[in-house]
Image 1 (spheres, rainbow, N blue to C red):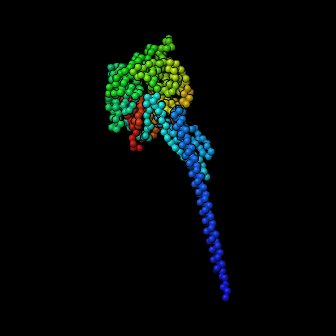
Image 2: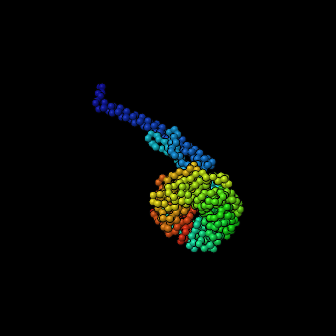
Image 3: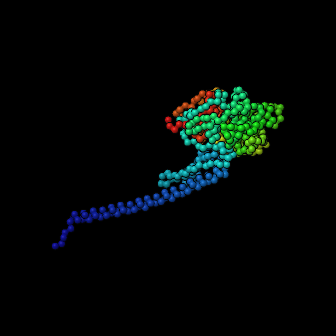
Length: 482
């Protein structure tokens, strides 16, 4: 007998077909997803490899440029297009001889933003040599909780300048009593955080400035002769005077500022107005060759007709902070010391004097006398063109009447400012954006009753020279945060 087909059997056949189609569709879909997924991974891998190669090449180019002209290595103003990629180099000046370079390469794929970046450090060995190896390392702390770590007094006679090298502190003083010591050497123990006196000597009626290079301390005195005094400090416990030179054709006045650069010492004096003097006399800016420190050779001078309160030198240019009402910063070409020439100036609003300078990268930091509330006393200048500085930003520090900005040290995004102010001898500023300079946020107060006359920095330590109370104050950032 022939078997009869039933409706149930037909139903099962149809269901089997549907299941087969479903399985087939899932398999095909999975294959398609795998294929496209593999394509995406392949594309990502290729673009990543290309981007890494481009970032590495950018850093290689930056490093090569830094060896040719360290100062010219600066951040790209905007990303540069390279096919599907955008490339941008960011340069941060950490110290005068150290930069951090970061190369960022970014691109978009399928609405995904991707990027790679590499970073390296660039050092300026040639520049460090020209500065007499006076080039510090970067700071490691965030400086949100600074304190006075230690301090020491020299008898209440006041300090005029300070320079710190290899854990030794060199201090000058202009005491009221001409017979008192005016040159001091202290050793700083960074572990015990202590200062130990190693030497103090009477040199002259008083010293106004010091710049230490290797085994020699170059100082300037407050007398009308013997303006440049040189010490051998190879034995810090027994400094010996090896040279004393007067500024030629200088009838009156005293030296006010000193700066070493590339075997030359630059000295600035107070204003030496003398309407009837020959042009060769009473010049305020002088240059000595100190290739042989014990035998300085005067090479030239120039009449500035103003007080020269501070000096910064790099390459062929000297930058002078002066009392000129129409040019607090004056710039001179010193490529030929026997034929110094005026090149340009920066004139800030108002008549307040320029008092202090700090040069870092293509920026020059200028400090001035206390100004009325509407004006500024701290400036960041662009000196990419050394003869024509332009303002990048400025700030009013809120100083007391009569106060001055006596010293500036910059490390990366922070500026440490010494001010001749009775209750705030040190200020810390955040300068990463020069157009928006702000007080660095800290959880402690830096107020202390000492008027700073100069500051220096070594490693993570600030050294302030003061005119009252303790003449040396050491400031450090605490490890604990706010």
